[in-house]
Image (cartoon, rainbow, N blue to C red; front, side):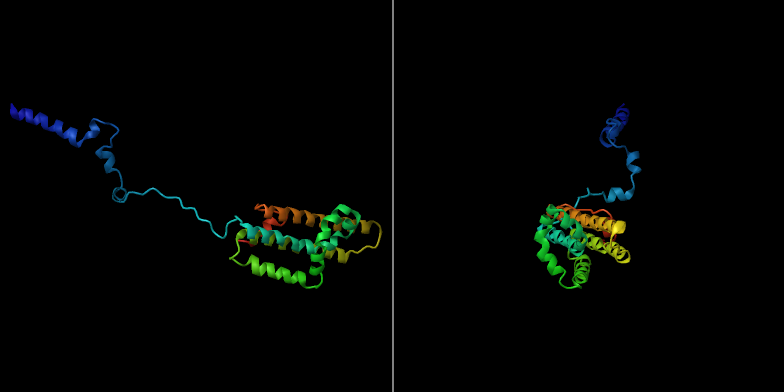
Length: 213
């Protein structure tokens, strides 16, 4: 009799102590535990921690970066100021807007190679210098690409130089369009940089992206 009771009591105790999954279905069973890979049991993964770092290659900008970037947009405007000879003389508001820049433009135009020297300085000292942030290098590259594009209207003017008539009207329209485009790029680019935003100029932004890693 006692052996019978002991026999029936022992499985009950074993089920309660060693097989709690029989009483609580939500508890993992031995079968489910055996299906877990051994590496997961020996080396459980720790929760990953997110690490945020600010690198020099980011598009974020502090105050010196903003100022340097804003100044760079004066380079193509100074180099292409001759295209505004018709607009500046005909529209006094534009003349008043540009007049404070005349001393700086005079210094820039005082030596024929100034534009080329500025180009080399901006490209090799700023764009190719990883010590500058990407924000500065990108804006500088946009200014350089914008200045390089001035080659096309210059070549067109040299090859097609009418004295009067419809040809002169076309040249005046071309020059005025180029100048107004440079003026808009100067205002938009410099003001955006001073506000800490990243200006993307039409036509030149994609070319600048390809040059600045």
